[in-house]
Length: 93
Image 1: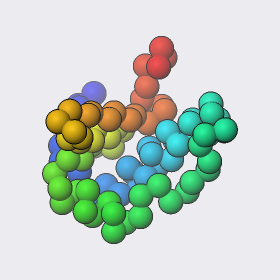
Image 2 (image 1 turned 90 degrees about the vertical axis):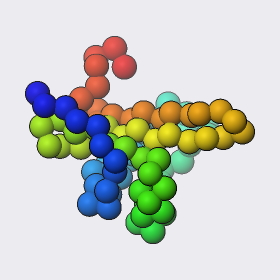
Image 3 (image 1 turned 180 degrees about the horizontal axis):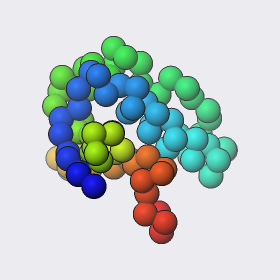
């Protein structure tokens, strides 16, 4: 398997949304008292801004986007968010 991590591009929007929806659905399933279903996690205009900020990366396996890496600076802390397609997660996750 050939793996690559690269800056996200606008063309990755559908793949990124698919992964983010999987994660949102897990949150809803685990904590329905806190999370609600949301099929519009990131509108395209917001996605474009994030891509242009160079803080979003995608992980590809054999040319298919299978993960997302977002880096944020918040109150002097570096936060790294990792999300992966459910069919590419290690069984222990």
